[in-house]
Image: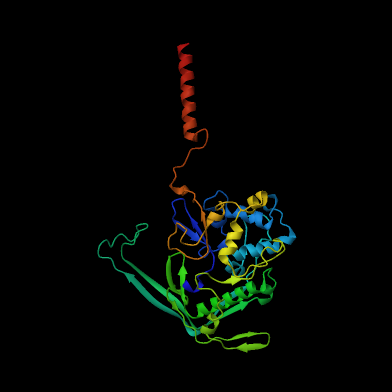
Length: 365
């Protein structure tokens, strides 16, 4: 959406350049194996290897130092900040602590009407091939069906933001406020019935159309916390959107001087997601060895694109990381290979031939 332009995007493509997924369409967001196992554009390393190096995973992911939690949170913030709000869990490694609990929760509660069940019928009429109803993977034939729906008197949506857990993130204050503003905007956009994307159907529809026959509208909003209450509007909630989102450059933050740069970033200001990604994917090892910046772009740095430099054309003109993942072929379409030594029938046939040859030899003798 144009409202969130400037947020980082991780794009997964196959070797032919076809778009397979993004961190926004995957149920596990940045923790998706398709994202972590995808090779960075222009290189051979994948994001999984990058994670292991940046957060200090050792022994094939069975050991993680206790003092590297901040590195994980900074890494996820640079690639997929919303994952810190919605929670994540990296199951690709054996260490179970590579996760973040949800900072924003939502639930719907319905109060049923006095007579909640509604019955109705549907019919599909086919004048071309009415007898092809049972044909597999074909929308042919005539069919009659009965349906029923449960109708509520009203529906209450409850949203909770874990502010204490948000405050305890190992991020600078301006980045925590960014996450809080983004969470409020998400709630406001949902209640305002803004457009949302369905990755399964590849279609865009209204947020409050939760089911095929369920169209909701928001009548009133109230909030409470720390002995305070209020009645905001969707416009006010969406007004909490962080400054810079929706603009070409996106939001900017103070430099994250966490003791690893010896004050080199002290004079920097206005660090954007593009700068965070560029620093994340840059090859620091070559610079440390030679004492001079490496000429041109490193193989990892080529994995980031701004839209103009990317082969994706006009997919997204914000900060973006592209990875390549080649799906395994559908095993169902492959011919079944016989086990080593052949099938039982083939083994029996060979045994019968051997016995016949032995009998012929004995007869000749």
